Image 1 (cartoon, helix red, strand yellow):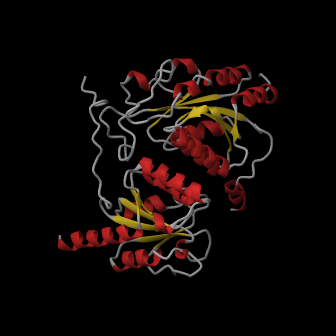
Image 2 (tube, rainbow over the protein chains, first blue to last red):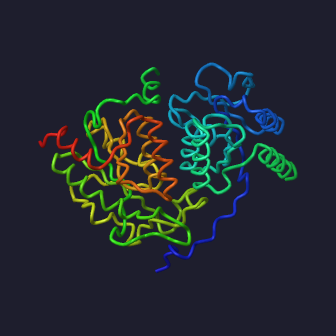
Image 3 (cartoon, each protein chain N blue to C red):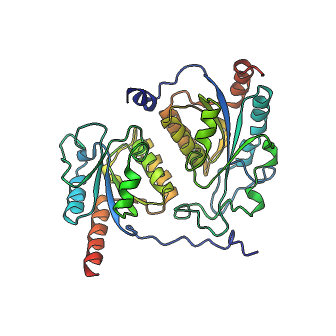
Length: 173
Length: 214
């Protein structure tokens, strides 16, 4: 029998961005200094941005207003996928890699990540643009997400560079 | 909207097992007699099977009081087409349908009349019939045992929590990919629903009180 059970040990080598990216902004992202450069990079490179907001507010106290054409969802639970059209939006955008910023690392981020993971998306975290319910919970959630996808943990600087490289590849085609 | 807000803030501080109870046996598969510790990968947590071997007593207590039992079983097609992103992280190829270790462990006594659901992702809710069974059983509280604490149990718990179920995790009957991950996942579940962590002895004692045999 040709069962590959024990023969496959090599990990798939994955890039920071596999396929096309989209940026998912969870609540409170604006309080993190590195968030503005990440959002601006996405916008200037025409990377789709989707804001998940609990109510009619913008994504944070300093107010990155949602621009025309940007996605907006209102998750009623913790995962941004549950009870929202996020899957459908991402499918229409032909996005395969989801960049996450904002939210509580151990709550909205972790459970959104899990749903994205189970829906076959590649997930990358701007880990300097989020905080946990506690510092220990933040670190534990980051480890749990890295367990699911090697390379999940990224800095916003790395993500900006990856978006720029993506755009360079796209425009050279 | 306000009902959902209540759910996610997790105010289930009533009795240990309120309302109609269902026992969820999550991914108890393969040999429970030996050790499955992979020293080279430090995986899964030490004494994993000892935790699993505590489960049959919970199952016996549930059966004695006619508490419905749902067995979850993770399976994957030998072609590997249904792994999604599961091989992009720490886990390797696992639970192939044609592998003997994928079978539900005989110790947990799956019976022909048992509820048995196969799943291809971590959460027991993801693309499965679990929700339909739970509605049919009018379940209010889900009691969870099995593995891994930090993966299938945690993500099943999170989905159940967000769907409004009272969740209880029997902390000496679940085991994780590492001891640290086991502990932090239990803390995360307790954060979602304060009071959700419980121990086997108290659960068995409570089942005798709350669920009269039919």
